[in-house]
Length: 378
Image 1 (cartoon, rainbow, N blue to C red):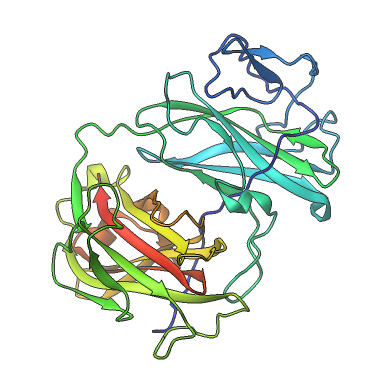
Image 2: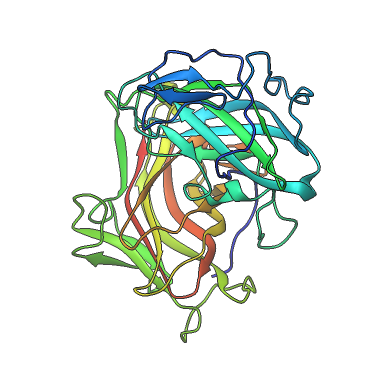
């Protein structure tokens, strides 16, 4: 199976505690700190945020309009314009601008807070959460120039919850610069409806490709599943198709595809803007081995258009973290974030049905990929 490639999409990256502090324009003094975390420039004292004794209240953060950060950001790199470009019930995508000497890049981190008690995902997101936060460009690309890392996805958040984010960039000497704080609210999940693609089986007949990509019953699924989709990725074995020349010493590119007809006419136009694709995803090394991140991955949806023609829409690049064996990450992506050469997916493109979906990526040899609980939600 040849890899089909078209477009644009999503990324991530993060770091370690930073050597200098830069204070955002929003005063969070007195806000509760969750899991001991406060934004840059504050510290957690008696479970509330207090201004750090090592930071000055006169220090400014990066400007929100995409311009350079102020002179107080003394590192070789500056970040600005942090904003949320889309939200689902459990995910927020953050984007930013970057300037400066990328040869001196160290890492990013994203401090995520919320005033809501017990809000999920409140912590400092680092490369251990989203590997691309360790990179200013993704290390690999299937065919061309590696993509800049200027966005990240925070996953598995609480629905209908306000979050505050601040991005910090560290250079190779440890100097830091911080963005202004950006706010975003996740969608509510009340009265959420679903179109089933896969959960304990497909909603309709399906053909999987390659043949080793199969439905597996028993343990290994997401939450209460009794069966899931699974492939043991071993391109050294005989009969593996679809490598398309996309191999290096440790990883090869491959697509895992499901051909199945799913009617989507229940998704009405007023609901399309908030509709999203949802999938539980697991990627790990086989027992006794460790998988490297899938630095460049894709999700494709092939739809049936009026007149019987087909069109692929996709999100790429995604960076997918390697998990401990059997651990899953819930991925949610708005349908309007899928695109092709004609533009973003719209309601008209999905008015009839979905006939194929696939996940493609550069996977570590002898790794295990599992997919489960795949839905369109709206």
